[in-house]
Length: 54
Image 1 (tube, rainbow, N blue to C red):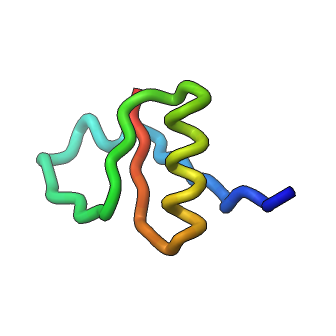
Image 2 (spheres, rainbow, N blue to C red; image 1 turned 45 degrees about the horizontal axis):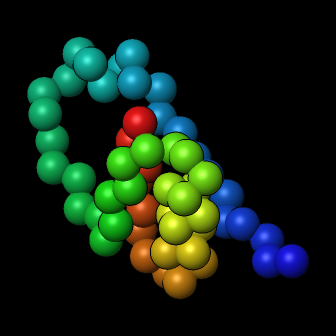
Image 3 (spheres, helix red, strand yellow; image 1 turned 60 degrees about the horizontal axis):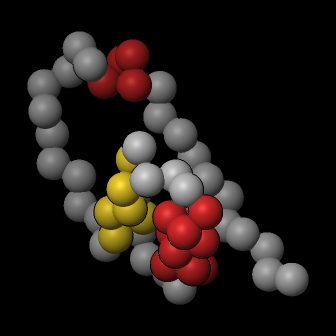
C-alpha cells in the first residue's frame, strides 16, 4: 500500500478579504470525490503541485 502525500488546507476566511492573486499549479482537480482524491494523490506523488476545489 502506498502512503498518500500530506494535504494542507487554507483558512478561506482570511482569503476573502484579500485582493485576487495568481496561483501557479500543475494540476487543478475539481471535486473531492473518490476519483478526484485518487488522481490528486497520484499527481502529488509524482511531484506535481496540486490544488483541489469542491
